[in-house]
Length: 307
Image (cartoon, rainbow, N blue to C red; front, side, top):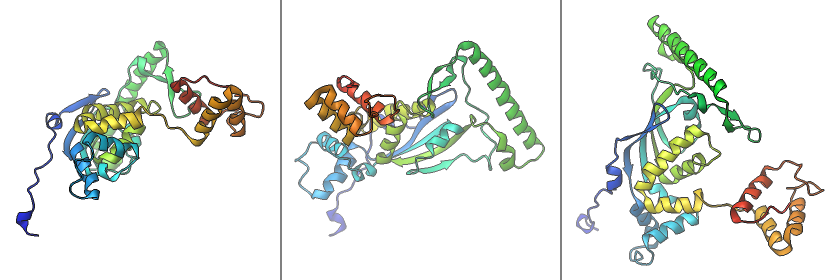
């Protein structure tokens, strides 16, 4: 083939994203997310999927229908054809959770080379959350205001003290790499974060979930609703339908629901005992996270809890 046989390919452009390039979306008291660059669109996903079938198959499927099929059947490579680059400002403790998602390219602000960002996340008196009894890594409700007032006051004192010590070390000539060691985890950091759409959706599915920590949930919600939804609307619609708002039924779930349908509550209870979700007497005294998750799914589907 000769060069003249190939058509020129214009860069994919999404006007809804172009209009927000560089615009910071504020999060928490001093954090933000802003779009730096992007590659691809819904059309790019469709194009990548159809190349497997050769030229001439484009009329077989509507773009939206194909994207929904790909999402529904957990195809990944077509979604990897799209990428997003973000500039984020985030507290260090939240960033520790964020950076665990390894399928991204990251360049973070370095406190070895530069003076630490003079900002730390603060907590209003009504924002101090109580440790959850049932979830060791989560929170449930808020402390009363009198305790919140005290904790916020102490937080302000501590952050000022830590910042004063840090600046004192710098003024005395201590190397930045050592002077930073006692900075609180509430200190903000910044990073450029580039990730493909497939892995971004996995990040959002985990971090937009109600069980995720509130702070990172706010960042994920902003990325999803303010950026991804505008970037790939068909993909976002399918993602919400098949991931965010969907219920995943395990083998145990389907067996118990089938038993409930065929044999009523007694049949479901018997099956739950057999599968170890209830104790031998059919009691819920035995703690089971899997049973609790099934109970939630049953309530969402409009079924009565059978035990």
